[in-house]
Image (cartoon, rainbow, N blue to C red; front, side, top):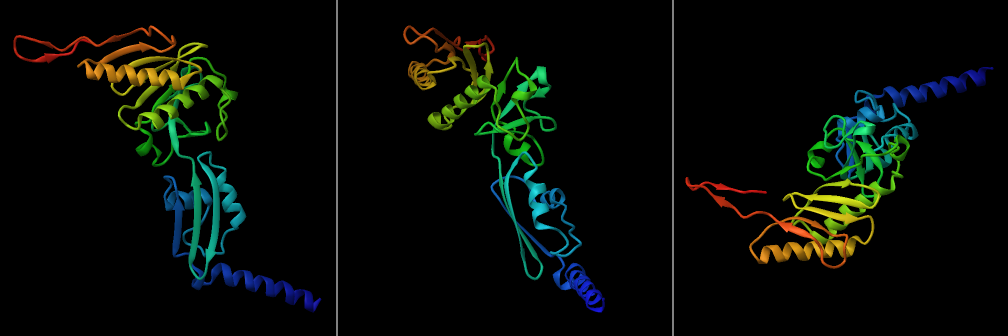
Amino acid sequence: MVLGAAGVYGTQYIRNHFLTNPEFALRHLELQTNGFLNESEVAEIAGINPSGTIFSFDIDEVEARLVERPEVVAAVVERRLPDTVKIQLTERVPVAWLACPKLGMAGRNPLSGILMDAEGVIFTCQGKLWDVARNLPVIEIAEAEAHEFPMGEKMVHKDAARALALIQLVTEEVRGSWEVKRVAVSNFYSLVLTSDDNVVATFGMYDHERQLGDLIAARAHAEQTGRELEWINLLPKHNIPGNFKAPAMHSDEGLTRVND
């Protein structure tokens, strides 16, 4: 009995020593991330008491709390004696917004917006994400079911996935000369892309590389002839229909007005 009591006392002494010893007070929280959460946000999510010691929390529990967040892919937490906790995060990087009125998804919204990463994983706009996501393209869906967009998981809506693939293809091929503002799932066979310079292009669900090549060629032709493309239907392989914007009109006062 004496040995048992001594063992319990010794365990409690050691535990209290590490939990309350000011030598191990948490003074430095080092955060390494590819994303947008900051130190205070991570500490709050993880349940780390900034007034405690580096031993006042369970590492496995902290890592589990962090990866429960839909925007966090992985988390590694380390203690470094005597006063430092290091946290390495891999966060999801948003590439597009999701808008679906039927499901109450508002699209580009700092408070209730839904984002997706390059893999099509769905997560909410929180913290500083708005600062980097405000100008991202919006994928507009008219018909969908909630189970097709599970939070923190990869979406299973096939047409939205094709719209995402189109956005990524444009980003890779165009490289900033113009950008996608939105892609709307028009029906079961077409996507309507609107660019940041208000060119409207109709794509199919497939054959995007050929269609994007035709769009790039049409835009280049418009520029070479001093015109601006207004809309184009890229579904046909030949005799592709489209239209140019009306030329600028000059009023008597010398002001310029564009009719488009």
